[in-house]
Length: 464
Image: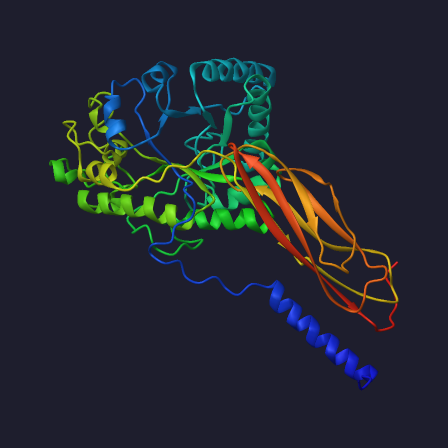
């Protein structure tokens, strides 16, 4: 066999590495077909008006397995449903955090005992309407940390959801702060360790749900920009819960004429759509989230029954009543009928094992024997909030290197390092396999990772 020159060996090595990266870097995923669906991951919920006597059968007819409630007296009525409870907690202007902590503990203990599954900490803190002295992401993160710590101290099983952000742009007076800006500041202040799921309100305004999102437009898919913030920071293990969404029906369909001149409707007139459009957009929104947002958890439609409040409780032009699925006489609207008839793919409400591995490859020379870092991977729960433990089995073809994994007993959220001993390895491409195994919900789950090591016969300086 002809002996290769040094320049030929270098060229061959480059070709080998190019081929290696062709193996490592996957081709772009093909467009999802209309029949291809991810594993079921959504929950289906609706808001029930506080201090109301809504028929719980309506929730059953809609196919909802969740309700979002506001008063403790409602909880028993929906004991057969999963319950998200809105826990409003204001910033303590007097600085009395001891009182705040005590109140949170007492409420959390009561709610857990009553059968509540999750609590949402405050509401739309990026609006002055909900944070009166002016929205402040750092303050809200402090409040969230206190709430999370106290809730988990007395009821660790309760899922803590951060207060759903309102989709908005930052106003000149900063009485409203962009949800994108607010969320980024929350994450940069460490908020992700203080919630189990992130709350968001992806209202569609007057746009179809499929409209592309952008920072300066308000659309249902704007939540994708929030998810991008998480991924930019390497946060893959937190679901986003869509704790309010919907479209506003035109009151004129019931001969109620509202405009921006009415203080109860001010700023909402431009959002009006017909009842048929409201129905169509709503079911398409559920379908879009089901098909495209594997990171999304329960979705809560706003709302069941605000339309039934008397005018002295909720004025006829209150925007809240026109997001409902019932008319002012209690009759089901087209949106009710369409949601009841649509396909519901309910989550299994279990954690899901996902592996994020980048650059699981290394290059070395026969002149540099020893242990090298092949790469790292993160073991993530990409499903319903929860945790699990896993083990790693290493498989190496004959002639391959000994491999060690640290740690070898894994928990969701762990970053794992993979080392290989290249002593006595022959030049060429060596492949290693890692089998990450766990059991979730009584079912065995496994993910396989491939790692690659290129060994050359080139003399070079060895890394220390």
